[in-house]
Length: 189
Image: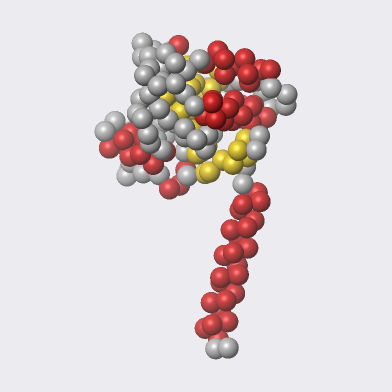
């Protein structure tokens, strides 16, 4: 074996080990893997979001994307290019299949709910829940994610819809935030 082949083999084995360790240590919200896409999303070239202490977080605000499909990458692009924001406004995006993407660090004060950003975590469910029904697996993932966040932060969080803080219909008339809150409160830790 030539020296360069030996180094290539070592590099490949190292990458494989790092990948496997990452899969083992990957955070899970009660069994649902959370995919961290924070550093893969579009950001404004010079604007940045403020940072907060995690002790400031006391609530979760639930949103819907007002689209029939999408993901954190699409929403980040829209928020930066169309809204002129520093990055995506949501901390988490939940797909219709129940997949969870972490799109901002919890310490980031992002733009998702005017007047509530410093104290809340923004969770967006992909879909237009004024005209669609949310899939049960997506609602289940939201419940599990909020329970996970409460465990990570060590306290119960207030759970509201975006419409409780603005005149918007978000998270839609078909997404029952009170049902999510009741399920979070009644789920065994």
